[in-house]
Image (cartoon, rainbow, N blue to C red; front, side, top):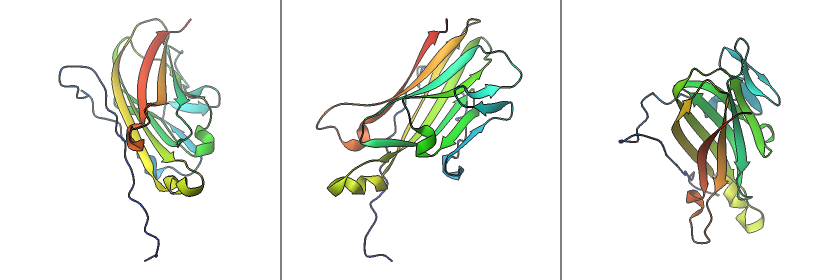
Length: 185
């Protein structure tokens, strides 16, 4: 056993959704983010990964585009991401270099009109310098789901990762995630 004890893993969990009991109707996709190799991306079987587009359906026309928008502050680094639609994991990625940047295309493909459940699970690593370098040993999980209405018109879903403000807010309560939708023009 080493003389330096490792701190416990910090977890931040954000849940949001729709409906009276706020429970997802479909099972959450099994992202198994801890099983991904370093710097990798996986798509579901009907898609292939294309830089600049994300997981792209090989058969269908585009009716939906999903983008991860990273607005998290300097206290965190995104290290793993999983996105599911209607209980199916459509995107899994790991690695800080792979997930660096302000926007990451996640999915382009067809979604049938109607209510669709979007699940997002992200893993962040704490970031610190000097006396705060211990933060690099901490991991934070941020997850959300939302029911979104898809019409016949193309739609953009933005998965926005941001940091809640407040000098007295604990570090584990700062990472947050929301889903915004808008028509694609």
